[in-house]
Amino acid sequence: AQTVTQSQPEMSVQEAETVTLSCTYDTSESNYYLFWYKQPPSRQMILVIRQEAYKQQNATENRFSVNFQKAAKSFSLKISDSQLGDTAMYFCAFMKSQGLKYIFGTGTRLKVLA
Amino acid sequence: NAGVTQTPKFRILKIGQSMTLQCAQDMNHNYMYWYRQDPGMGLKLIYYSVGAGITDKGEVPNGYNVSRSTTEDFPLRLELAAPSQTSVYFCASSYGGSGTEAFFGQGTRLTVV
Image (cartoon, rainbow over all chains, first blue to last red):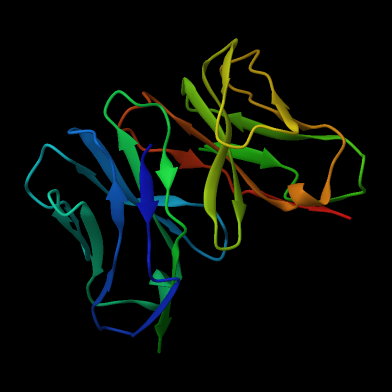
């Protein structure tokens, strides 16, 4: 069975600084997908970034980028130039190729300080 | 563009009562999901559906039932509510399942007293 671990329950960062959120996962699959979702105080979750395991290049979306280390089964999220609106709970998620279900980590609560 | 709509947003139930959480999506997505979110536990899958008339259990299905009579709607039924069902419930949908983005509703905060 696949598992997703987020070892940082809470983090804080100063506005305009850079922060990295950690995620590790366990799977015997060779092909899969990894996601970072953001859950702001409004509760509605939105996709931040997605990575396909067979792509070696790390995904990037504006200020958000990932460091995908397949051998280490690590998938960290880097937020550059942090903004107050980045304050949220961040969930790492896994889905195996041809899979139907998302498996979520326990989340990291990020607070951006003014 | 409504996306995924959940109703109600908040509800308090007494032990033993029943209720249905409604979920509707207007994106013509085949796949729909129900998750519950408990503090420090992440999201746990309750039930999912890959199309109208097809549903399957997730990790934590006990105490819940679902149906999928149309592509748009995926209601979650709680029978005989228990305090352990106090949680925030999220409905989500996606177009193609594997690797595709899931779109979430705003959640229903349910308290069983």
